[in-house]
Length: 144
Picture (spheres, rainbow, N blue to C red):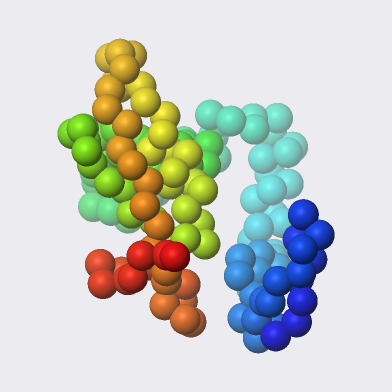
């Protein structure tokens, strides 16, 4: 463990052996493919809703067995759409992993239904993930 001086400057202990959200590790394993696809998008000038976006939707749909697929801007947007589709009732609770709960809480707290009218706002609740994966499961304890 070593100190981590976050935005507030307060030191906290973080585990050196398994950093959370190590994007360099994922990038290094797919560097060539990611570099090529990024350059292809940049050279096309279509940063949103272009041919790469359409290709992703089609390929992901095929991967899922031909179901409808919509590419969105980020994971928070995807969570929001999923929560809207559930049409949660008043008093609903959305449980999220504490280490990524901001995204789920943000999605849950956007109180606009598909019709544009106000709807019930679910209550975000956070759980502690497992010690190695940091993923929540139905049996994960609540965060303290």
